Length: 110
Image (cartoon, rainbow, N blue to C red):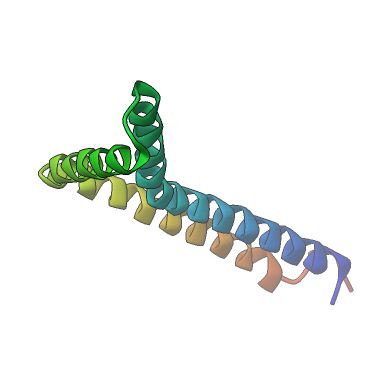
């Protein structure tokens, strides 16, 4: 294996790691956002002076209402998922672009 092909493979791997990280970050934020909202609501209600159990129950109810309101907006849900799908497709396309350099024999090489 030539040095230029090895470099291309290294950069292909770096591209793969970058897009894998961004995709996991995007979907991870979508998963952790409701937990953070619940945590902040419980802290707010507890700061007001409500007991922790009551703050948790009110926080879960408020988060459930927010989830119900979001579920009634199908365009919003579709947009969020479509952005994630486009991110995955874009990353896959960028990784495939490196294949052309790996398969080409180096010009001028003997």
